[in-house]
Each structure stands twice: as structure tokens, then as C-alpha cells.
Image 1 (cartoon, helix red, strand yellow):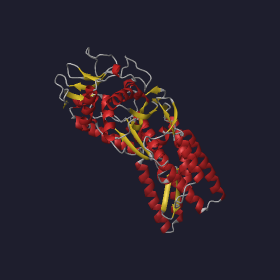
Image 2 (spheres, helix red, strand yellow):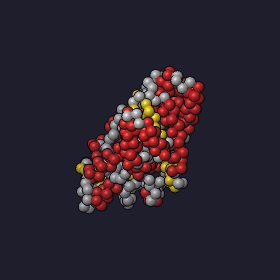
Image 3 (cartoon, helix red, strand yellow):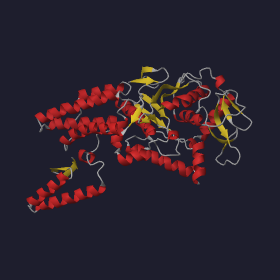
Image 4 (cartoon, helix red, strand yellow):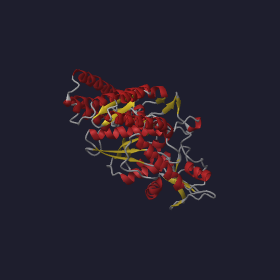
Length: 466
């Protein structure tokens, strides 16, 4: 497996710190609002990475965190009158449901900030004891970036005016403008506070990930984990700060490889709530099937920015349709073993830093070749079994192609229309039983006029939108 390392800015051969095992930590959402397409893109990219590694024979352990204490969450609680727990539980569950609709598997470890406070306090105290952090008069604790000679090695840029450098206002007691908060003391009438030796308050944004990684993973004396992943916007300052505080607290690097997925844009503009053009995943799922969205969002290489537009989405669906039309030709058939040459070619493509363009072209070629074989010999049972197994392999690796073909082609049809179609099919079945073929043919014609094609199978009549 070759992956692109964001730090060295080149493709590197994956050599895990433990033979045969790969540990992955992906930055998850701050659960105060609905997930948008940017969250979906990141989740999908690392879901495919994990699937690929497993197919290559690695034991994969993935963690994805949930930030459930944050200034934005507190503001949401104040604005709605709901408790922190109510808000974060609701949006965590919503996130998991929507990712499930996209076929994203659950992480092996799903830590929350509020469940990691002991680990966070321990790491902060270690940094204070080692002289890498300091407490100011109001109880805040800052990381002293001047004490880390390697600060900046991850992102290769350190902008003192970076808007996201810290999620709290600067204080005159900071030693350096680049220093960032490890702990935020409660101020005034704030009541979302946790007690520690340094002050009553809550953790900074960056420290939670470092503490969670040290709590749940046991690396080597060189690295804590193999791969740290997330969106490109997290490279600086979030991942830079994570790497610094982990390096100084543990004496070794946080991750051996860093992987980042590109931004999602809508008609050319970077997604941003501040621009008012954020496309919530829940809205997309009301219009498009999760598997179609999965195929579309994974159709562009994970490192490239993604320009979301309906025209391209529909074009992607037509490409996916071709796979399901092939599946329809071999349904129902039992599974045997996938085409060995195809399986090898698909894994080789995905082993090259998840080269999805090559993978999809390999699938397109397989579809074309097998349709030609079926045209020549439509009753070849062994061929049909191999095609079924091949599509099952695609679904296992890439997460699409797993639906029943007639179910797939019914996606997006109005429930009222579905009920009408089902009623007509029942009437047609009764007419055929009564040998009233004039009526049964008339019903078929009516369905055809509605744009519905039907097929009589040993298991009953199936239908799809033509």
C-alpha cells in the first residue's frame, strides 16, 4: 500500500509500526449541528481506506472522536435552553445515522471529550511538569510553542494571525502569540466547568485528540499511531498543535503518516457556514439514496477538492446504474468466486493512495466485458455466479453494488406511486390466475405508460422505473 503523506508531501510505502496491524485516528465532528457534505467526504475517505487495508490483510483499528464540549456547543445550549447532553447526544446520534446511510462503518473506538477528561488532565499536567506549558493568573493553561523546536514541521507554516489558531481570545499573559490553550478556565457565570488541579474549566480543542490517542493506542517509542487523518483544513493549526503537545508530552511523534482529504465546494465555492452555502447531509439524503451519494462523493480522489453539483451527481448515478444493470442480468444467481484478475486490478488501484479513478475505470471495463460475454451466452451459469461474486467484492471494498437491482432502480419513486404500482401488480396477478389475459396485458400497458417496466420471475413480479 502506498499513501500520500501530507507532511513529506509525497507518496510513501506504508510500513506499519506493528507488523500486520494499522492504527488510524480520524478527527470527528463537533456535535452541535447537523453533518454537512464535508463531514461525509472525510468519513467516506477513511472508511474506504480502512476497507482497503482490511482487504490487503491488515488488522485495522480505527478511532474517530466526538467533541462534545466546546464554546459552540455551550452557545447552542444557551440559545436553545437545552442541556449540553441533550444537544450532543442528539447530533451524535444523527451523525451516526446519516453516516450509516452512506455505508460508513462505525469506528472501533469512538471516544468523547467529556469521557476523556482524566486523560486530558494527565497530559496537561505532564506538559506543565516538563516545562512545555504554563498557567496564567485566570487559570488558563497554554502550550509554550517556543519550547518545541519542531513546531511547524507538520504543516510547514505557522501564521501568528491564523484565525483558527485558538478558539478563545488572546490574553496579555501569553508568552508568544502562537501559544494555544490547553485548558480554559471558567469565567464569570459560566457553569459548564470541570474541576482539575489547575482550575475549574474545560479542555482546549487540540488537547482532546492527543489525550485520546495516548489513552486508547499503545504505539512504540517512535510513534503513537500509524495514520492520523482528517480534512485539509485541520492541518493547521489543529494537527500542528496536536503533534506538538503529543511530541513534548510523550517524547515521540504522534503519527507516522498524516493523511488529509480535500474540501467540498458547492458550485465552486468552498463550503462554509459563514458563507451561508453549507449543504447539510440530511437534505441530500432526502433527495438521493445514500449509496448514490457514496458513489458520487468517492468518485473524485480524496486529496482533491470536490465540487458538488447536481449535474455531476446525476452523471455518477448513471455510471452506477450500469453496474446494477449488469447485476440485474445475473439475478437471481448464486455466488462463486470473483474474477481473480479483476480483483487484483481493483486492489492494485486502491493500493496506490486510493486511486479511485483507476478503480472505477477497472469496474467500467468489467461491466462492459461481462455484458458482452452474456450477450454471447446468456445462460452461462458459471459466468453469472462469477459476476455475482465480483459485484459482492466491489461492495465489500468500495461500499456500492450491494442492493438488489430492482430495489435500486426503485430509488426516488414517490410512495403514492409505489402503492399504485403494487396495487396494479396485484390486480395483474389475479387476472393472470383467472386467465384474463386481456386485463393482465392492459395492466402491463398501463404500467409501461407510467414509465414502469416489469419482469415475471419465479419469486414473483419485480418492477423498476424504466
